[in-house]
Image 1 (spheres, rainbow, N blue to C red):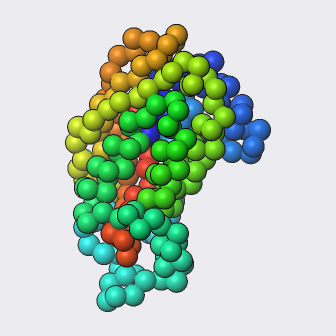
Image 2: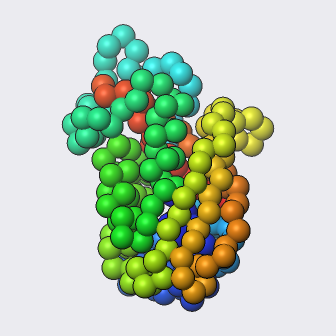
Length: 203
């Protein structure tokens, strides 16, 4: 999620300082008003599935103990019947928000994700609960999903999600142009369906 989609240098710096004081970094912190900084947090890709088939540990009707434990913390509506539907659903919530709803929406994303995607959502939710800059500027982000496809080349093994987003608000957030943004993602299959496990904004 572009949270916010176009942070100013001052706002981004303030947000980084707040999260740095807690010993964490904000995966959405930016230094320009038009792009997102790439997320550097990675997970062990052997633990997630990037194809339409069930991962090998789950074939034959068995699920590893640690995976089963993680699934017990998922919302009952967390899964989707196909990878594309899971990504579409996640992306729509990720890119459409207002300053007053962004923290709650990040919490919702956490209930429907696993792995690094969940960790990022929880971290962002905690950060945005105390972000007065977004509220004062009445920031809103709206967008649509342009495409969802399996990656090729350097993105081979990932899913690539392209979104078109516009940020609006008062002050520095007024009149910002719409932009295309690329996210790499990976999923895993659980008892509730397909779940986003990796969500890495690239631009």
